[in-house]
Length: 392
Image 1 (cartoon, rainbow, N blue to C red):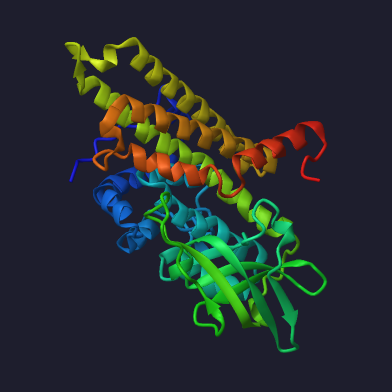
Image 2: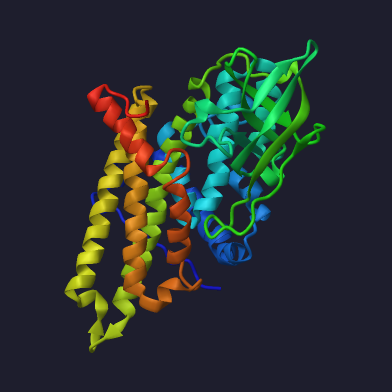
């Protein structure tokens, strides 16, 4: 078991822009990842198993609903703190960050924002503590980038709703206790539905044979005439804007998380390049390797500045969907290119589980696609600057 020697790059002294609370939160998450995630994550990825032993630790560092008010079990932190936690967790592994992102932004957020007080009191404290785990059902087999075309539906049966349909590519699905599911009612209006494990007709088959996010648990949500109590409908927002609001929060977390993966690849490649001797000197002294490393730290620094500013806007409730899309797209693209360049610096060693780089690279192939593909986010920016939608 290799020791985690990670040293975070901060080329522009961006720590000076963070508050004391930000630094405390980030450093606690960083130390927890070094202690609890790094020693086990390679084996978990090789075995394609989510390490459930870390759930309580994720809760302890505030990874579940960090910005949810303390009265509901959250940490009551600001958006920059949330981003920093996601950065540190994804430095460990994108799949682990996915579990925390889903719990926070796609399960706790809609219950907090769109639910009623009874629903908040029932679910949020247990989700914050990790006693309950959740998932988010929007993507369907035939509707990914066009979620408004969903066919999952609810029918009013008088005393209850009847839910039918299916969702796929759902993180946390195989073990989730509660699913926030989006379905159309008889008028074609999208509604949020809280589906609990154990409801008759509800099943969550696991997705196997993944080459990416192997330490994350992925599955389907199948609804076969599931009876949904009327009190399980989220009452305070409906329409496609409701799930998209959740995705804004999750994409914001991804923008920070991708920086963590990039930092880990850069740090690994820099350390290796200083130690690897070829032609009688460290390869860090070779021009082409210095080019790779210099470009890596430049792109990481640009992403850090972009995302810090986005965090400020988010704290002020001024961040737009388009701004979040730009950060998500830029930072994941940045991270995946750094992972590929870092792998080249390590040569053949870069493909082994002795180093984290290939695992990050494979994970980022999913991150660049989920919660809005690379191309869709480009078109969101395009629509924002031109005022013309390319989607229709």
